[in-house]
Amino acid sequence: MDKLIAAAGRLGRHGGRDAALILIAYRHGLRVRELVALRWDQIDLRAGLLHVSRLKGGVPSTHPLRGPELRALRRLRRRYSSSAAYVFTTERGGPLTDSGVRKIVARAGAAGLLPFPVHPHMLRHATGYKLANDGQDTRAIQHYLGHKNIVHTTRYTNLAPDRFKTFWRD
Image (cartoon, rainbow, N blue to C red):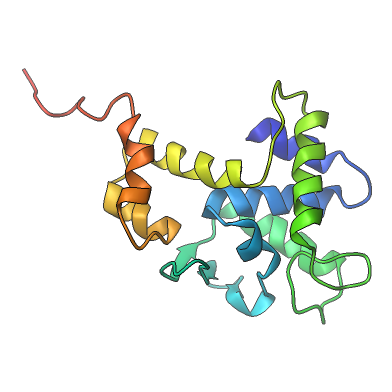
């Protein structure tokens, strides 16, 4: 992910926006539609909170924002129009489209010399696998990603290499 974010940051005059977009999508497991619909009124920079509205019947939640995310969002707020309703906007101030996000992520993947094509939904899956591999509870991952049914979350924990590591201590 670091390689992808760094590559996005080096691309053109919107590199900062694109790097922030990938970081936020990844850290919060956002779908493309959730990402392009993200509004400044869902973000509390002082309290460090992101109010996530989920699509596809998902469960909304509130996520903490950490240092890298807060810095990236503050830079975006200063750089782009403070009157913009949406976080990730085009040059004209409107929200990015799904297609625009797909192109940003694909370009960053190519610029980062990743050996496979990258698309935005991979970021959401990467979130699930990262949290599972870090040993996070399956129910917590379910709520973090907004899954109504835990079956959609278990794909991430089924492959966690250390999932039985702490079962017995000799």
